[in-house]
Length: 171
Image 1 (cartoon, rainbow, N blue to C red):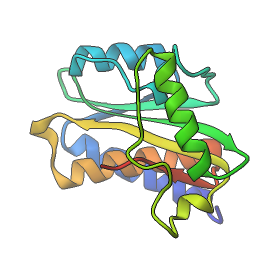
Image 2 (image 1 turned 180 degrees about the vertical axis):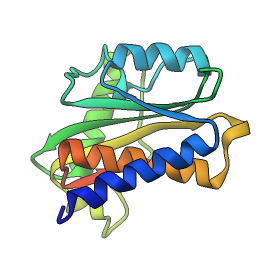
Image 3 (image 1 turned 180 degrees about the horizontal axis):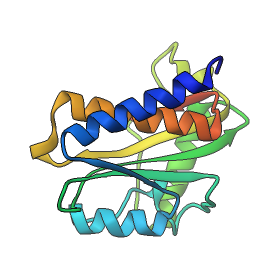
Image 4 (image 1 turned 135 degrees about the vertical axis):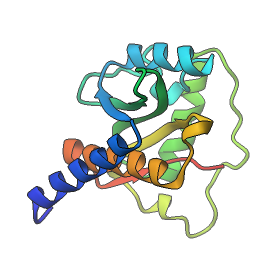
């Protein structure tokens, strides 16, 4: 990060853009509150990767973001966790995910045991941040709201942990 002031100013600009839509950005490291908020707005618990009973989270290993409308209702969520991966993401992820679901007494069978040939996940290791649980309520699914919400969270995650990479699962 060559110019931290510019990075901080970018977050301010993104949060101001969200405010122009009547939305407020919040961040918290309380993963119990994240689970409760998701149950309230979506009707079900967070996935094992961010569940407080599955993972051991300190304020240094996970955080989540929400956007709230003028009435204070949560209309968007996303979460991040930070892990030290000593092998590579491709090998670590399969075994971690199976174990995380098993801790919740759920069966998860991966569709593939390895990523596609040449996947960058075979080259990623070190301090890696996982980005998941992204949701925005339908009336707020506008391109600029989604982009501003995600970009602000990515930048703040980078500032907090300075990870070697930020990754997510997409389907």
